[in-house]
Length: 347
Ligand SMILES: C[S@@+](CC[C@H](N)C(=O)[O-])C[C@H]1O[C@@H](n2cnc3c(N)ncnc32)[C@H](O)[C@@H]1O
Image (cartoon, rainbow, N blue to C red; front, side, top):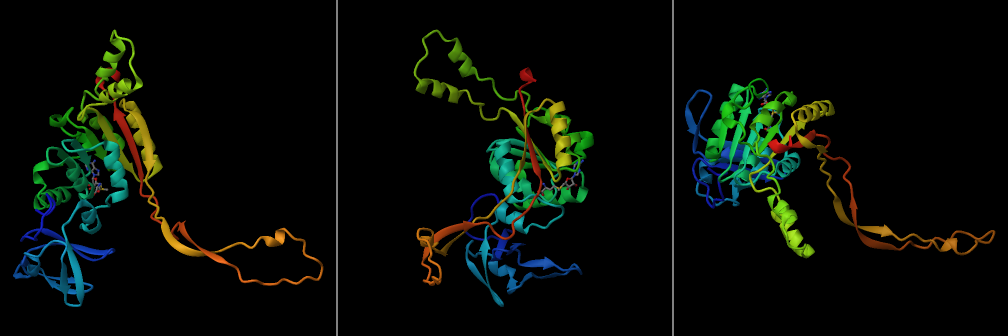
């Protein structure tokens, strides 16, 4: 139950992140015993590059504490979607935090949102959706792979997230998302090899009302009194923003531009508007203090006479805070194609 909310102390059964270095972390279940390949119950001893850990010793330890390994130490952390993405057992390719933050922002998911996702894959993105929509929202996630569906379901329950997610096994390109989800979704996300086939089904599942018509703005234009100050107009314009829950957004992840072009075409055919294609590239800025030599430009002012020799004076240097790009950086992951389904009256 360690994803559901902040906790102080590790309880038996919690999923715990064992943090060795920034690049070396493991998630383990805090249980005293496990079953070996011969199906015998044995003491759970977890091996790391800094030695072994008797997992039963974690129960009752404070999250964030340092724990002793046989050849070093580690910190025990409460998992969150970011740490889970870095340590989860990969059953498929997964999405990572830089793309995921853009997906959440573009889909405008918030507590209470109804989100449809396919495919579930390894559940990396699902955990972020669940954090964003809880406590009152719901995630409907689909995958056609039986084992992946079963494993994801098991993980969501073990992580204390089971009440906010329904995992279904279905080929969404062929069969869609089901009549029961017609017109209820605030957002749909697709990470599929042929997402263009699922887009007509997504249009059916998104909320029919679309963006609420700007009623207050219409009232403003129809009213009898003379126009007031800009300040008043501003406040009216703000209240005409779409109400929470209205509107339908879609996002599809495509590793190549050809797939993203097929998605754009399908979105246009299904009445989606404001289609955008985004690529997220994470660039690290390396900031450091450097001694930079001051350029000696005096020689430009005076003409050197013939036969005059170069006199080498030591060059002055000054300390500057500099910023530079790293030698290597994370490259292309994919394109995010985003669009809005307008209200029925505007289609
Ligand atoms: C790349 S993975 C998704 C990874 C996921 N976004 C994550 O972050 O963990 C793609 C998944 O889509 C599923 N899939 C492919 N075609 C499908 C279809 N037509 N209907 C449902 N699921 C499908 C695959 O089984 C696979 O698990």
